[in-house]
Image (cartoon, rainbow, N blue to C red; front, side, top):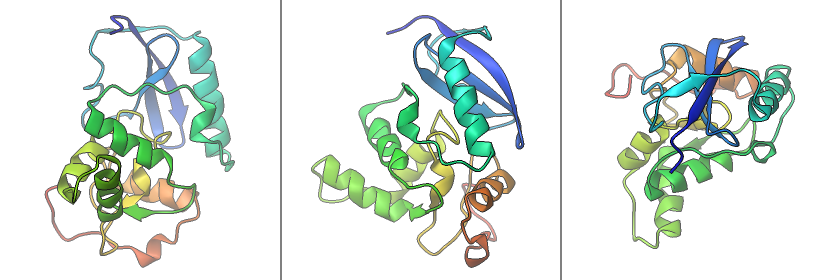
Length: 182
């Protein structure tokens, strides 16, 4: 396990973002005020601004916010988490730009990949909510089975912004009246 992690800051249309790296891979990307900020990084982060992987991530973000569709695979990612979370995050990476899926659909796919009969959508929701590499690993593309814009660790207004930025018809979705994920 790597004992050294680094951070840098990036100013986006959504506000400030903090990027984390193990020196070679992106290990985190959090929005200002995001829930679970930095909780998967197992060591102190030292701020450094000139890592090549940060330059690559900043270029990826510049392209994304300019309306391009950079591939998740364009960056070396190393989110820290257990096997279950890694599988969920891998599935998130497979959701195409401008498309959405549901927690239920992800739960079905996780069950298949883990050779289980079924998987809890709530467990999947927990793993999605703890995604340590926001935007790049597109957890904002996951909605409730009924079309509910369920909670987003970065805030629902940012989830809506990201979905609209990608051309998702958010008018077909709705904000839940109440819920534990909000």
